[in-house]
Length: 113
Image (cartoon, rainbow, N blue to C red; front, side, top):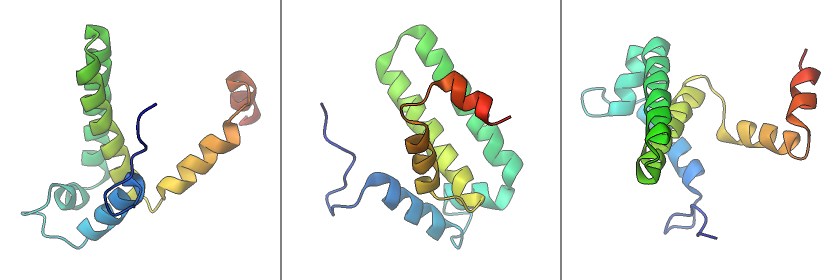
């Protein structure tokens, strides 16, 4: 098993990323990619998620594990941008995954109706 995603300062990567994304809301869009995404708005963020999802699928179809990791990291990053833009913390998503853990996926999906 590999090491958990903890930064040298002891902070978990998702917490650090969330803080960085939040700080970029006030940054200059000319100097910050994330600030430029926030400035361009939801449609641009969603487009990036779609692009990264497609690139992840292509990497998987090609069987390139290294590329799958890179593209999945891009996809997760842009999903984190969306969550932050919408005022949703990564912890809310983790809590939902924890809630579902051990449940049949079919039963869980049926319970949403």
